[in-house]
Length: 285
Image (cartoon, rainbow, N blue to C red; front, side, top):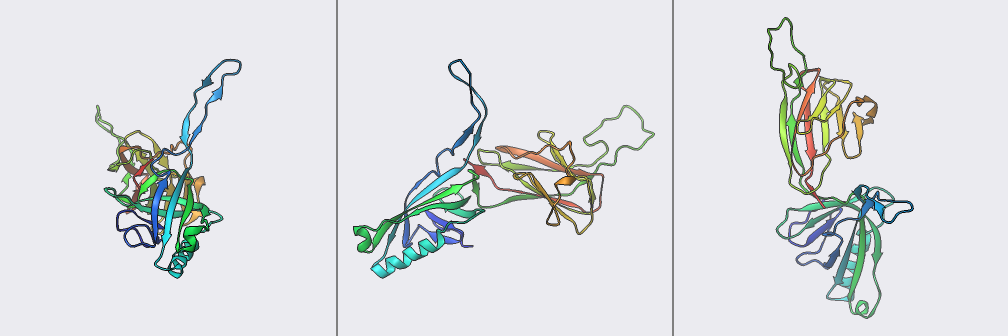
């Protein structure tokens, strides 16, 4: 998939538009720098004035491009227009990837789908130039870094303590276990949701947010060929590509990475070569 490499270039599923020399230029972008729509849980106060204040959650984001399509002939303009129409198509489900390169920033991305494409036929059109309006809807309103941040951890064994012991003892968390941990910085301004990929051999692994004390525990014995994926955004778990949310321990607590730094560790009842890969993208709104 081609990615933008110059200022003011955009890529929609690998199709580059905007930037130096492009036949399809970007005149205006609306909704990219705006705060996304909000879902409010405010409620009426019955027979009193005012409202009870509830929680506000981010809803979707709508991004609207105003595009200029030009050519040194009608044929050239029609060629560029046909390319635009071929790439800016509706999709029945799922999302595509819009990458953007705005000056002084890293390459970023949103996940979206085309919801509108308007191309007027007017006087300019007859002279080999026209403008198009394309609207993209992002179910996830966050704007992510295109680059993935990742880290590798090796589980420590939660083996408990061996008795007889001489007291007093200083207990750590987990008792008797060795913890490998890494700090994961989210340089954006909104909570993002990591993916945890655990490979065996490991028994009953538990991914711990050392910063908050929350943890996600899996009740399973994974062999050396098993791969378990925890998607904290969708709250989904798969084992070797198959749904496996039934392996989630009832005491588990889902957690994301808020702005700042989150330290993660992994422990297990037994382990002999298992690993945890933590992957995520910095995100902003």
